[in-house]
Amino acid sequence: MGETRVLTRRDERAARRLLDADLVANISVAARVYTHGVERARLGNDVVGFFERGRLVSLLSDGYALHPVAATPAALDAFAQRGERRRCGSIVGPRDQAIGLWQRLTGLNYAAWASPRSVRDHQPVMVIRATPRVRPDPRVAPAPTRWLDAYHTAAVAMYTEEVGVAPMDPQGSYRTHVAGLMMKGLAYAVIEADRVVFKADVVAEAGGVGQLGGVWLTPEWRGHGLSESLVAAVVASCLARYDTITLYVNPYNHPAVHCYERVGFRQVGEYATVLY
Image 1 (cartoon, rainbow, N blue to C red):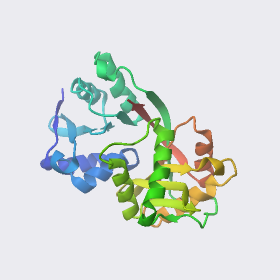
Image 2 (image 1 turned 45 degrees about the vertical axis):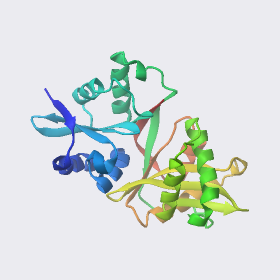
Image 3 (image 1 turned 90 degrees about the vertical axis):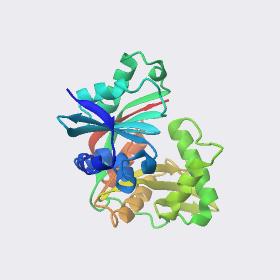
């Protein structure tokens, strides 16, 4: 029989050990915990732990997304009991854990979880650790902050195409997020005629692992065999900073899956995302 509670500073070392056990699967949570710790005051959301005999065995990041980490069936049962109210926009994580949590939440007849916009339940998790198999495109480079307007326009197009809704809010938080990536040198682009025609971001980094996301190519450039060399250029640059590059992709996006495979990525697991 286990117990759940919100983690505090004294639990941070145990939480990091749990995250370190599979950094590729846990990279998005690890990146934030490595930077901010586990307390709400710095992290911005609760991290809930599941303990057995006083030992932390699973956790749940309860922020904009619910993200389970090393969640056992017993932990998923316990996490679901806490979830009557939905405050997040998605459930995401290793497939069995994310889908298992969603099924438990709906099984408890919590109405807030009953009608997701989309369930993406077989998203390949891919990694690359060696030089890309494709010659990198020399046009790809970190996007300078003076191109924020153009990069933000491309990022909004990518997000809307990927998620199905535009990331617009009165506070401009998405634009702030994009600007932050650019200031850290984590936003890559090809800019032509004052337009960003290709973009990709390092969306999380921790312990020698970098996660790519936000990969987008303007529609008129698609279908011409360009994507492999563009992605290869991002990977080549990132491998100077990280030991492992990872990403996950929707399985129905066959061109993207084939592109990553040709660059040299290989599948190591599956994610799932439930979008509201």
